Image (spheres, rainbow, N blue to C red):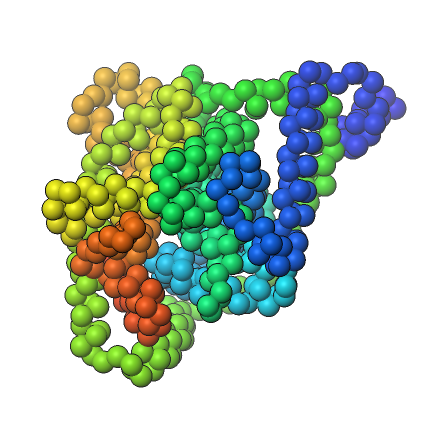
Length: 583
């Protein structure tokens, strides 16, 4: 009887919570205060976002420092809402692409195109849709801004999760098959835990990358009307417009404080928690540390309360969701090839239809000379992107490996790296303009670093994730056999980080094309400087309201990004899956 009662108590965490007689610990009290404060801030921010649209005109964005905490709260809530949507998108579409070859043929090229479409391009088509969902309310504009931030976060996370699912070790895959795991149970028990360490670092990078586009997402333009949402991005945009460097510095300082807070309260505990999912047989001697994670582990009431809330999800995870399958239809090799060709024909038909629609729209105002001109500009931007990716790789791969192999330093440098990745490039535009004009430098060369300023961090964060994922077994074996120097890089470091590096370089490449739109044409006051390239072409066409030229520029950019991914990054993905897979 006693054994049955104990079993019942273990099986029903709610009963354990109700029967607790011990007093809450100091960790429970601090954790409760933090959770209560977070709940109050979320409720307040959500309440402000649901106000009528007219309230924005009644209280416009100002450079009043007293309102900066409110702006910081609104921006942070938008970014975390976009991050939640990005996670859902990642789990659904990355899993489909990794598990289904036919789905992969659609999803991966679509992601290649989507990551090359500028954030402003998404806003052009989505603002009206979201505002019509909630007419006269701020919520419609808020959703448009959240969607814009989502487009700067989702692609990197999706590529990271997709890469991890494609490189699950063969022995773990075989074990899951022998146990007869359903698709859902395999995802919960194998795929998600294996991909978590790398995904966590990419979540941090996506969060930081979202800051790069906050300025654009918090100033929504509909026709001749501009709706400015309260936020740090709107503060920075107003300060830059007024050429107020003091206000710019205050806005960047507020952004640094926000990054430090969510690093300490959210990301560092998640990194420490995710360390237990590393694929190795020997316990790591230097595990990541977090004071929040350590405090939560010392709580009594909070852990039991969370267990009670998580118990239904664990029960759902134990359910075998598989359904009886009909006898497998065995197709001959010839029939399978015919079906594959038919599938390709269907996809190709949709692609041809899309090209025809775009060509019909553009041909009303442009001709073939415009197409060749834009193609030439795209090659100029391509050269910049490739050179900058190579330079960034030579700089950040050694640094990322060094940081990833030293968890103590990773903890110290994590908030600094997040701040540098989040630093808005347009804050540096005034200095770039002044320096180029003062020393009469060539904009085609000296505006180029602005392209990689916000996207180089994809390489760093992914390399850190790859280096930290190198198992202790491999590192111990390398130490025992005295593998050093170039041999260590060739046999230990580069194979370990290569799949992660490819993901980082791919997303950095796509993001650089996007960033070229703001980096190849910069202004400060009455001074305006342009570099020859596709980005400056799209920026000029957008400012002049020439929609046909904007559509042509975005289409050519998408073609170049897709071709580059197919010619360079996808073959490297396949190589890492075949030759560098953990077995």
